[in-house]
Amino acid sequence: MATGLSLTACSADSSVDADIVTVNGAEPQNPLVPTNTNENMGGRVVDRLFAGLKYYDATGQAHDEMAEKIETTDRRSYRITIKPDWKFTDGTTVTAKSFVDAWNYGALGTNAQLQSYAFTPIVGFDEVNAEQPSVQTMSGLKVIDDRTFTVELKSPSIDFESALGYAPFYPLPESAFQDMKAFGTNPIGNGPYAFDSWEHNVKIDLKPNPDYPGGRPAKNKGLRFVMYQSYETAYADLQAGNLDALDTIPDSALTTFRDDLGDRAITKPTAQNQHIGIQSSVPHFAGEEGVLRRRAISMAIDRQQISDKIFNGLRNPSRDFTASTLPGFRADLPGAEVFEFDPAEAKRVWAQADAIAPWSGSYEITYNSDGGHQAWIEAVANSVKNTLGIDAAAKPVPTFKNVRDAVNAKTIGTAFRYGWQGDYPTMMQFLGSQYYSYSETNNVDYNNPEVDRLFDAAMAAPTQERSYELIAQAQTIMIREMADIPVFDYVAAAGRSDRVTKAELAWNGLFDFENIEK
Image (cartoon, rainbow, N blue to C red; front, side):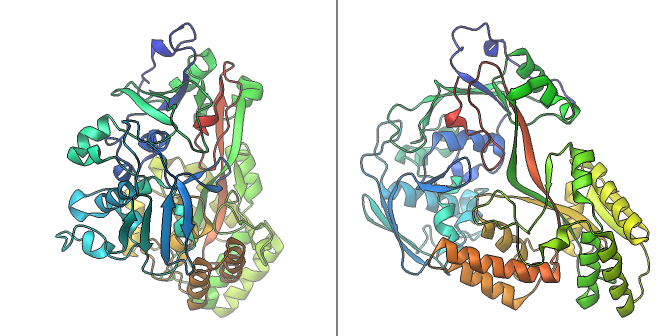
C-alpha cells in the first residue's frame, strides 16, 4: 500500500492548530460542487459547507434545516417555504431561486453532473437531462417568491421529503454559475462551516460559520481533512496523537484496535449491507424450486459465526432486505427466522426443492477480488457445502466492474456478492432501487406486482408510520419468496485521539463532524 501523506501541522505540538479537529480524508475526485460530488471524500466536505432544506442527525433522522414549511396533500405536489434571512458565506441571501437554479443546473444534461439522477422524480427532468436538451429548466420547478417554490413530481413519493437533505438538493449562490469549476475549488456555502483552504493532496481546512442559524452548529473550532493514501498510516497517526478522529480502522488492526484505543475505540452499525444474489436464469433457481433453494441456502449460512470469526463481530446478521439502522426497521418481520442458522430445516427445505427437480452441479458465489470479500464469501460457501452436503465454492473475478458487467448483462450464471450503502437514510431508498420490477439496479430479476403495488402505496402513504406498515407487508412477501439472500449489515470501526472528548459516528459510517468536541 502506498505511503500516506501525513502533516507536521497536525501534530500535537502545533499550538496554532491545536484547537482544530483533524480527521482523515483523501483528495476529492472533483471540485466541491454538490451536484457533481458522488464519492465520500468530497461528500464529507460538501456536507459541512452547505445547508439543505433538511439535515440528517447521527441516527439518520431527517430534520428541517432551511425548510420552514414543506406542504403537500398528495406526496406529489409540494409547496416549499424557506426560512428568512439565511445567508451564504459571501453575504448574499439564500432564496427560493438559489434552490431552483442549483437543481436545474444539476439536472441539465449538458452540465454532465454525476448526481443528476437525484432529480429524476421531478416533472420535466427527462427533457432537461437529454444529451441535447429541448429545454434548460425542469417544468416541475417554479419560483413563487423569494422564500417559496413549488415542486411537481411524476408520481407520489414519501421519500422525496427525506431526500431533501441529500447533497444534490443544496442551494447555490448566484456567483457559482459564473464559473462552476472555479467555484468548486473555493466554494461558498450556507452550512455550519465556511471554506478556508485546500492544499491539494494534503489537506482541506474549514472554519465554523458564525452566521449559521441551523440545527447542527459546529461544536469545535474548525475541521482539517488530512489526506491519507493508507489507513495504516492514518491509524499510526491516530495512535501517536497526530490525528484526532479516524473513521476506518485498517484491516490489519481490527483484532487489536479495541485494546490499542480502549474507550477511544468506536463501533456503530451503519446503513450498508451485503447480500448474495442469484438470477432466475440460473438452473434450479427459477419458480418455486428457486424459492426453496434460496430459503435453504439462507438457513445454511451461519451468519453469526462468520461475523465473529471473519470480522471480529463487526457485522450484524441481516434481519430484512434493508439495514438495521434505518428509521422504521423491524427485526421481527413474519418469516424472519429464515435468516437464522438452522441446519435441520435447511436440509428439509433443500429436499423439498429436490422433489421438484433433483440438484445437479455446483453452487458457486462470484465475488470481486479487489474488494476484500474473499474470506467471508469462502466462509459462506463452506457453510452451505457442509450444511447441505453439496459442492459449493467461492468464485473470484478480478474487479468489481467484472461482476457488475456480468450481472447487468444477465450472463453471470452463478450466485454473486453485492451490497448497498444508503444515499439517504430511508428504507425505500434501499428497497425501491433494488426490488422494483422495473428498476435498473434490480440485480436479481425480482418481479412481484403485489410488492410493486405495496412500494407505490408506501411512497404515497399519508404518514411515515403508515409507510413503514406497507413496507413491512412488502418485505414479508419478499421474505416468503426469498427475493435474494441478505447476509450482513455493517458495523463501522473507528477511533478518536485522547485529545478529543466526544466523537460519534453517524448513520452512514462517517463522523458526526459538527459534534466532535475537543
